[in-house]
Length: 366
Image 1 (cartoon, rainbow, N blue to C red):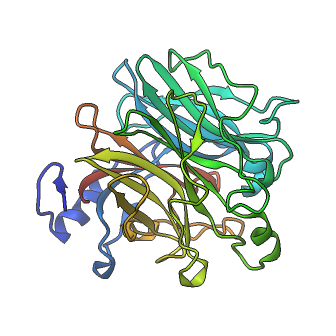
Image 2 (image 1 turned 135 degrees about the vertical axis):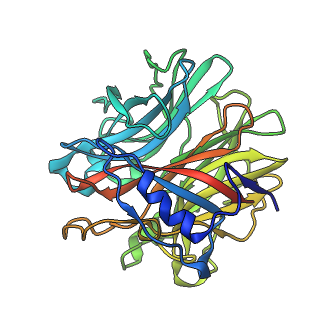
Image 3 (image 1 turned 30 degrees about the vertical axis):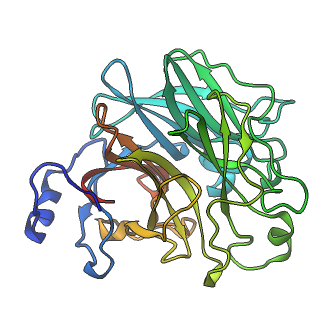
């Protein structure tokens, strides 16, 4: 088990509470801290930075960070008009670019980079951005759909030599669903990308079975699983490594599943951070490890619910998922490639929508 500590080790509870007085202020609407629940000690010890990107007229989601050649931190994030409500992501999201001088500083919006294109596979929405750099090229993985519903969600890849664009995107998706009846016949979404130790490029994706989704009832229909496809080039073509998913909790109680995976390599292993959907708690994050990307460990808690870190006023009735950190993304160390900051999306903020929220990772245990 790897134990990485940043800064001063052995933080006491008093130290942790005192840290609340040094959080960013002003444009970063930072709430005060709560104590951890010791019975659910997470793998990541987090220091809240705050709501570092908020826009009055938009819901913000999916904030994917990367270090720029300018020494600044750039994020590619999804957003949609406030009047569409929380569910507006599936029928009107666009992907935009923002920048900050440091990971713990407020971000400035730089405008839209990808928006829906009429007549294409991404004509209704552009969502789920994941920014990666391989060689001298930036790859912006994302999800698009063409009917405002989940069954046309497909993963695509836009490319550019610069974070400032221009971005070229494909006329066709990079990864299609499975054949009718397959576990992944409904869609491909939530891309997670890593360069494999086998010299290939790995694309993890979320999907589920259409029949299960249509025939089940309840708050969460269908069981979301993760598959893996590989390619010789970051743009593809991607070939699925198996007809079966590589992460599958469907044999567990309570329709347990996960989503929003982010994958990285460290000390010869692959690690995955994701949002829990019923394994422990719908408001927690999960951490899994694998020696080969195919066999994954039992999930551990990676982070807790938002109220374990920050205290905010009660949300309005329309923010029913308030208190969750979703779409977790890591900003890795420039040299070591190890986790430094956790970026996520969470409901709330002054506009009563959703914003980017950033945590500094003070230490972690893998």
